Amino acid sequence: MRKVEISKHKKLHVRKGDKVMIIAGNEKGKTGVITRVLREKQRVIVEGLNIVKKAVKPSNENPEGGFVQKEAGIHISNVMLIDPKTGKPTKVGRKEEKDAKTGKSKLVRYAKKSGEVIKD
Image (tube, rainbow, N blue to C red):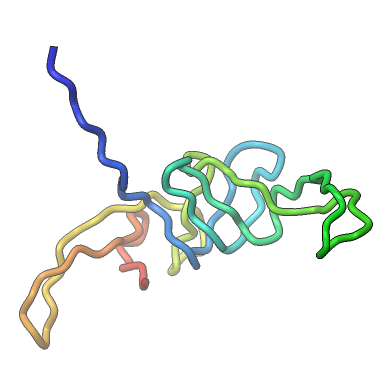
């Protein structure tokens, strides 16, 4: 039996700075901007959403200890990119686009609903 290597850096449909809508879970229907992408865990952290309380031991920075509220990760399958043209959630596609100045082609992301190219 042959062992198949899985790519460590799988391309994701969302990136840091993208505006997304959460489509499943407690925060369903809410929108926010991605602040961090955790590739290995296939999760994203969305600004101001999925807030959890975490117990923290006393330390030099926080001598009191106690509970801290922070944003937890959301699985990438539970978020959809917001279409820049319509403002509604959309799937993301990739296509090659030629650069007018240099003539080189590069892979760009586009919203499948409107066909609009997503600026990075």
